[in-house]
Image (cartoon, rainbow, N blue to C red; front, side):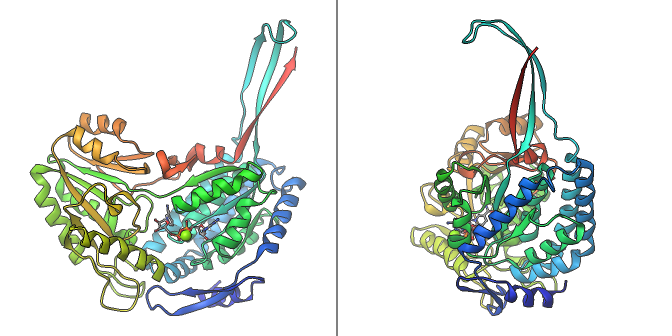
Length: 484
Ligand code: NAI
Ligand code: MG
């Protein structure tokens, strides 16, 4: 399953919609193209997924056998890791080392959820009902069953194609659901390899179907489809809201993993030698195209100048370039659309009097590269302070005490990730309670483990992924009551 195989294979996929070009964000040239699957393909995929679910071929298989197949998937992820990394790095422009680093954790994610296949348990309750409609007294033996939702649509973005796809598929498979995965139109290539891996591992036909198409066509049809029981979506808050509306037709359940505007608090007692480079890469990594990137840094006044200077130094020295460029630590933005969007935020800030300490421009070369950008003198009402930019752009503001830091950190509609850098342990944990965020990292950043749940407070999401909560996302509870 080489790169050339995937570039050819995607052209051959049947479709009835528009032709969609796939652009290399490093060269701005077309890599290949495919035809949007079209609405009929969505109906077919739902019918296939439903047939697989209703047949019990997967959900009815003993958990230990499903686990065995999921372990095989993990082994195959390792076997094809180099191909997957090459394809994802070409398609997204991310450094090859970064794409490679994702593969072992993707394999471990499958092994983790393989373990859950045999541990989907309900609870038992002995209860004595008193009163009720009949006024009778009854001894009841009751228990709960955890059952898969059924057919789930999984719509994912372009910033981590393999990683996010597996993160959606593994818990749904462990729960016994049938998945229809729609990768982003910008990055559908690695999904074709995922399809092959699942088939090779012995996942029955119809348990996972990949749909390649646009969001406004395939994605929207999936979100509105009466035959889909749940949608799991990662992407923009704007589309998340559209999905909620689309879901009302059959009141399908919705999981949303949306954007962030994550605060990073750096105290004057922090270990700055670690905090500064971590906070810098916490936003510049992947050109800021990560939902948990720390895009608002708040620094205690005593070390403010030092931190701004340190962030600027990283911004000016980190090497940008494509996957094939020696020493490149950061790739480009994904598309011309994202470049226009990011530059729009920056230009608006400049006009409003924001101080551009460094960056603020695209690189003078081919590809959608933006110079890592440090902004100060930012008004908290500004769009660039309030909205997710999804570029290598950070605002830095000073604070004096905890109350001021918390007020500023919480002053956004998002609540995905927050970070505190301080050597005062008590303060760190007190702040962890006060920050309105689904994840708080103390003296570390960009850390993640598939055993730990991730979810958004406020408009950063609905529901949880990863960990035990991640499989529960794909399970519903049935209560069974028995008169003794
Ligand atoms: P998007 O939210 O439009 O795209 C994400 C996925 O949703 C893609 O698969 C797309 O095809 C699909 N989609 C788009 N419209 C849809 C619809 N009406 N119904 C169903 N599915 C639909 O994100 P986009 O436009 O690529 O990026 C815009 C901004 O969104 C970024 O600047 C960033 O702020 C945010 N974003 C956040 C991500 C995250 O990880 N939280 C990932 C990607 C984007
Ligand atoms: Mg969009």
